[in-house]
Length: 510
Image (cartoon, rainbow, N blue to C red; front, side, top):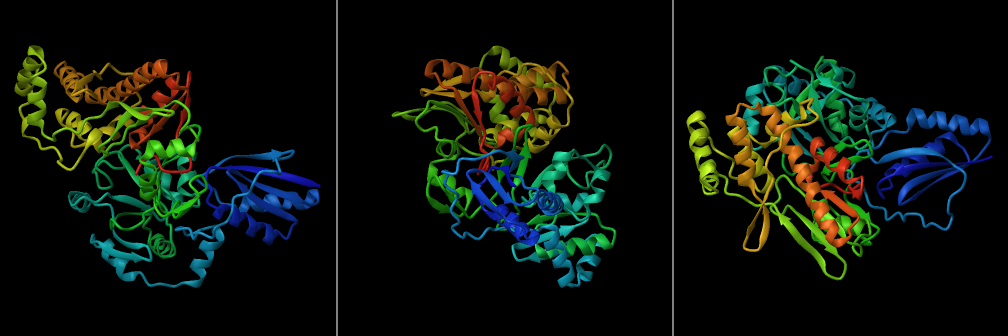
């Protein structure tokens, strides 16, 4: 009998196909695996008993992948479709199947005693893999803050996945992503009181992963044997630390990163790209790249590129024959609380009075410093954070994600026209938050409301642009959309009338 099994697969990389082909050989059955854009087919010509045995093997040995969608049996397929050509591009990815991990452990015996002694003494171990260097240490507030003050992002390496639910609020999706073949970084939320002393993170969240290469697999095993179930680490900037991912109900979303994704052959551009940066630059930015991926260049398409740290966030419209026109820009502001207050005072006399009263009630705010190495939304959110006596944009967002609110209050999101360009008026945002703060509205409500109001701002102006241009396709991109409040509220509203496009095969941002 013939059986055709379809696996929805949102990348043109071929490593998953090769894993399936190895399992077909292991099972010694009459079958082939074919990969097309968007899906993989397993075609078997076998007895019912052998097919049943093969699928039992698949269930046992086929790893999960961040790119997998639904899988199901189909009656037939279009045999005229062209299979994806294998260009033999070596993936920057260790395919750590269960068999591969078992083989690594059985065939290698590295002594990590010195490293383990160091970290158990509260020191930092400089750990080297073929991908680069990591500074590893046990959860410790002082060490964490020391690295963060030097500009490093601190992440968590999990050595024993069975202990995950001891410190994190996990769902099945979190666990599946962590354990997928691509070994991505996943943002996890601590259980209440498990990070009370801030030894893991300054907020209730941290990006975490499980071992992703031979050396780290062996080191993690040695740590686990000593009862060490997780360690913190900072890695060199040049080190490829994998993909950061998030998800919606409908799909997994790659936030950023190259490892396991690049180098890559793009079948639309018909060329190889070595990194996401190279790919985006070649296409003229993230929005234009998505237009190319989804064949929307010749269709009126609205693009919302909201990036936390890019200088060119905007809402734009792509008009066939005319190209892309920026409709609303996000300003790159001067990173100074004092300057911000002065600009708000210049709006009108009511705002001037607000600044005077706010400065009297919260005199320490003017003494705080704002990071000077930020742009766009990060600078704006940093300003909002500071007037709420919160350290930075990261803490601001993580507070929002910790809430159970379903609706908030209206934060002013208005436009100001400067030299013929419509900008999001950051002064009004900060002024609005300050006014509510003067009325003793709590920080959690204000922070949640910021993202809810930003979603309303997007939806309102998308509707206006769509009325004029007859656009039905909306591209959402940029790492601001990793915020689940902003993304879920925006997609829920806009999907009623438009086709929402989120990148599936490429990162959301640089």
